[in-house]
Length: 157
Length: 336
Ligand code: SF4
Image (cartoon, rainbow over all chains, first blue to last red; front, side, top):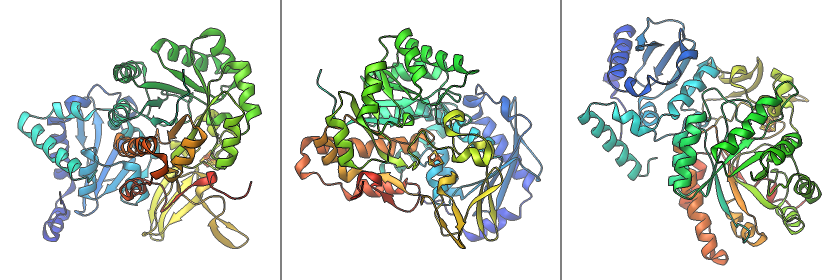
């Protein structure tokens, strides 16, 4: 499973304005995984601003958490910023990778409010992968699962 | 009942981690509640009542045990909450609780006489007199020995106590004779023994700067990593400090304990259980490490004489390790 974006694409992505990218991300997120996450205790996260920085594409996504899901935010100050490559974010999302391992290897950086960052990480870790998967539309869910199973078999986990 | 031998005890900071441990071959899983009654007090981590009930159900259905760490020290004003945690463990059907505070042991013994008690590593008992004392007075049935004894010293303990001895097999190292370290109090006012963490999330700050990634604990710079350097946990003991004009790891280098190659010795001595560190880590880590240790313990039990750690196991464990190397810790050292 290789997920390194070609240099030209990365350059193009980096030049896109941040808000549409954040909006696209928040919308996609709300249409898929939000359903399985909405019952979590988001209380402590209200009004806080997050930034996900995809290092190799140059993309930065800004958002906050509202009662109805993620809300895209304009570029600016974030309370906590996560930085990693597209591949590593994908592997984290698929639960193939341990965040601490990535941190030791300097592949994951958490800047800003560490406690907030840890809270998000731990809350997401507490949700079972099957639960997340169940909130995806059928075909997409099966596809995601197949990618994960294959990566596990290939011993990339 | 025969004494257990090399049971595999795995960490869980969440329900998925517990299931990963059970599915990959843990004999027991240990966990904590969502507050400072245990020494992995991090935001969003650990178990609430619902997750606890489901975890116990899941493990018991597969004949595995669940242990609860209640290994910090209550203060006069908070004692009630610690006692309630003991009650929670007893009602939820936990197989044992892991305690450090003698007052809490007395409470558990009186209130829940059938609840099995383990002495936490935070209890800091390093000799058999101390362990036997806990046994006689509170009925402690197992003791987790601090990671500061050499294996011959551990053997001496095993020979002089009826209490089962549990050793750390893998994971982060804590050099300060667990339970006796106050280092973090100096930087941020929170000690591991009362707050439940020596790198409290609220005090930790990481920042990428032109000269490297800086780690601070309540503003105190504890390390700066160049881009190629591996990072360690943001604890004071693993920081680099200037001592007499030289900047280096003055207390401890970030390394992981890995005792895989000592399994035949541990088997011979009669170590009851091996503990894997890492309740703060993700289900992916728990799955990977449990799998390796299950295979290794099975292999040593089949034939201790021919046991050799497989290179693939070591590679897998090194991959998830803190720091760039692993160590046998104090278990292997010629001096006493
Ligand atoms: S600061 Fe280091 S030695 Fe002290 S409790 Fe934390 S890990 Fe152990």
